[in-house]
Length: 77
Image 1: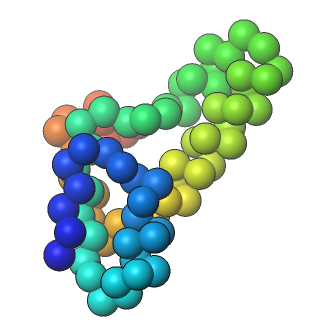
Image 2: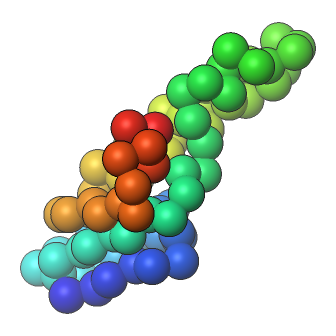
């Protein structure tokens, strides 16, 4: 079992690839990127950048077997 408490979510797919039978638990203190950041984007570039990062963040997060958060606010974001 691997427990990530520092938020290196982009490493999850590589961990799963290198050790396919490992269980991956993620403790998230604060989300790297949030949906509401898209609403705050002031330029087209920021909007597309945030959209891409949000997509990738969700994609790599799906590699975790269990995700824990420190609050309901964090879990909702």
